[in-house]
Image (cartoon, rainbow, N blue to C red):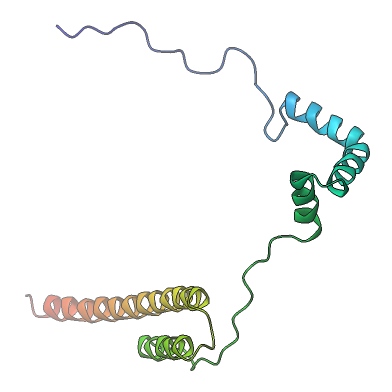
Length: 150
């Protein structure tokens, strides 16, 4: 029939405590030590090669000097958003801004995601409020039925 295939592992670690939480790998520590020791000559060599026309060295230097540009903040007027209907008006304002060329479609997409998150938050709050009201009303009915033996 179905026999167990041996004893299960013993609970606990019999090989000691292991590496302490938060401690670093020895190889990583050694690599960091070497990089720290040779960082100045490595940077000088990279700059020298970039100045001699090495495209990869040039790219490496430029990436450090001028980091890749992040998305710029989107500045636009939106109506006050307090209800789900307000979110719809705000979304319509975003669509108008895209169609008029005031903001780029990727920026509009980001704003729409934020507005959708706000809408979900509003809806969740409204649902919680409605559930609380229904539960309170239901408790009142149960007491009323208990008073009349129902």
